[in-house]
Image (cartoon, rainbow, N blue to C red; front, top):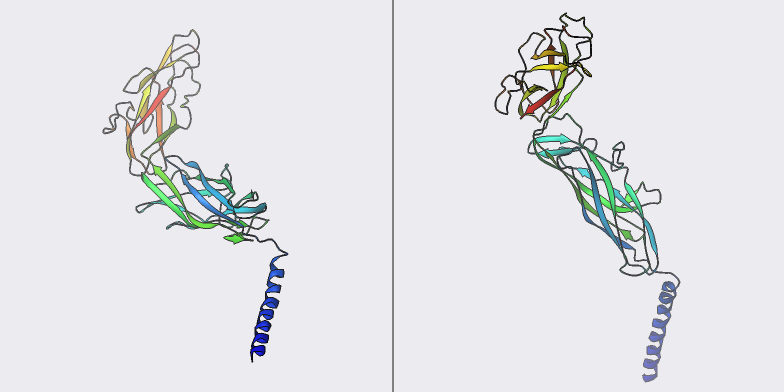
Length: 323
């Protein structure tokens, strides 16, 4: 019985050695690939009070291989926050919205979407714990003439992916060939302030007239853009500082003759348009309330007398929007 017991023990030990041998031979020929882990350091786009801005996603990738690892890192845009859609993201302030878009190029001609990920080639040197850092840049633009009121706006792109792409770069995945990234939320912020803009669309020309005759009134248009609900009053001031809008056009060179004119609203014979308007009072100006879009106002200039020597006469009028 002792001999039989010893034989069984030897047989079991021999089987164990025979089974272990294939495991050792299977591991030996290959080189283990641990890959790289990539993460986002910080990200976002802040318009401030402007209509264009550059956003960034700063990333870091740490390698865990004993050999050089090269791959394509990608950034796939996520789902826009409510009430935005993939085709038209929206910034939100309470119940007010403001449309915007993100672009992959600085000229803001190519809209960045989930189907067009941004890509960068990454190479991490051999060595466990080696780290490479970098950043993706993207661009934002808020279209003009929106009726959104002043305030602080924000939007988010949920499940934006810092991932690994195929060689073509069009297939961005969370992991590929041992390398991995992660999902994150990309924030966008903007501030719309109670700021108005004003432009003169053209000069008010009275044309060519015969000395001593009364020309037809000249006219032009000024354009005001103010945020929705912003009250404003517009004043016009000739270069001579006359608060009643009565200016003097000067000739050229040594010509000392002048041509008087009167700024008016509504028509060439309408009420005088001067510069007594303030933030709280329209005075002898013109008032309005912003819509977020273009608001045009006609300005007329009447000339009572042209009994002056032939010349070209002109003057500069300052337009002030009080709000």
